[in-house]
Image (cartoon, rainbow, N blue to C red; front, top):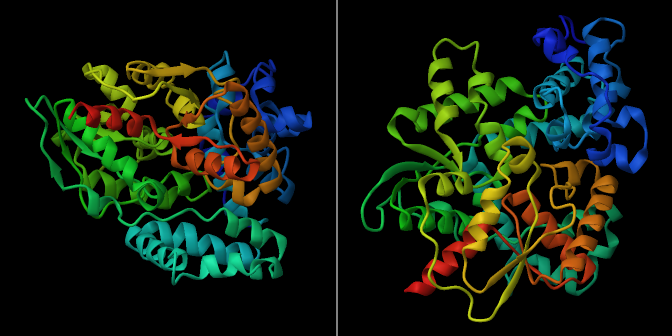
Length: 436
């Protein structure tokens, strides 16, 4: 066990003590709903954290497994009448798990070093991996089609077959190849904004970043989009690497000085929830704390920003009536409290009918890398989400997070559901293009 005080002791104790154990969070928690076990609920997990902070329990392996069984969807924060900051507790609890090291083993250490500590610390490495994946997926010369066509993948262990089936399609060009570093506003320039292209969004859905920049320009924004950007740090903070998250926050503050811009724009729900808390993350850093607080005030989700500045509704829509439903990214709705703005934008598109998705803010099972680390629970949540999608009769599901988007694409494919999965910005950009 690592020496030193528990990281849960470093929290303001009122944060740990704030939970009233009222139980209103229980019906909103996907893991508790599935198991009905108290330890799998937010209330149960906070009780464990408090016991460790009070030195009544040691941080055991069981505690570590429980913290990583949590989705981190933050639905409990929406339900909580006491305003418990579960996001802060969750991140410190996972950091404590990594500090004591009860979950460490050779395989886990190698995976964490490669992904969290190496790959996502320099996104040029991620793009290089993307290019290798693109070669693997080439239609005529790539290995993927050959291995799938001849059934060779059936020789692999089941989990590896499942992971290969989840491999995202890598687009032909990344964001820096689609977007100029400075995109002028269409018509009068009303705002100057910075655009964060992200990690998974850039690797898998670079077209969403292009669409977002087009929509911003169409609404009077000059958009600054540097070629080589950095990870926001959410992956690191959510996996117990708070120091690496702070390092990435500093890099972003250096690359996007918040005093230069009217807004710093993100189009990924999971990233945005973390990006808006740089002030808290760097509160003890005298060189960056003031700029981090200013960053928090300037950082905006794209839907939130467009409604705030008074966006221009498109004049044209799809040629044929389009039935669309909307799945809410957990961290967009529960973390950022951006709920109505995406719906408001979608409803302005002519010839588009928006139908509500049952349990629209219930987690789809993606939850960052949860679908990789907890495939059974993630699969249950995905099956539940697909059943609700089928019930709407929609031909398009809109969602504003790359993890959700990929999870729904794979789920629809596995269930034989013919439905397009698209970001609201893509649907809005398509409507603007039809005007031309």
